[in-house]
Amino acid sequence: MADQIFIEALTLDAYIGVFEHEYERTQRVRMDLDIDISPLGSEEEYTTSNIVRYDYVVRDIRALIKAGHIDLVETLAENIAEIVLGYEGVEKVAVRVSKLSAISEADGVGVKITRP
Image (cartoon, rainbow, N blue to C red):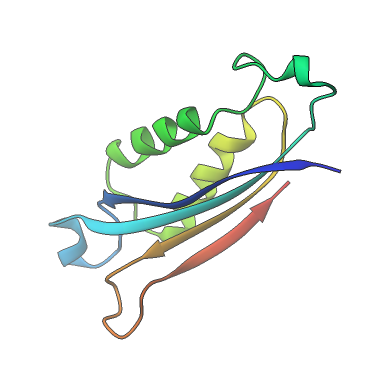
């Protein structure tokens, strides 16, 4: 049994996509994460030194996006999952990445992955 933290509707500008125009300007990308974590034993164990801090996760996602152009939303999702799974206590992560303006008739299009 796991506890869960989540990051909902993290929306950042990213250079993402395989089309020529997608290399020229950023797009709004929304990320939603559900992170399964090992439960802590007692209330005394709940300290900032032994929990998965969502502010650190967001910091690392920002750095990933600022590092340069990403061709596919699938690649971004995999890279985010890899970052999150690197935190101690994380058991599983579900990552959803949506490009918000890729299809004018849709609120967003993208991918959702789950990794143990």
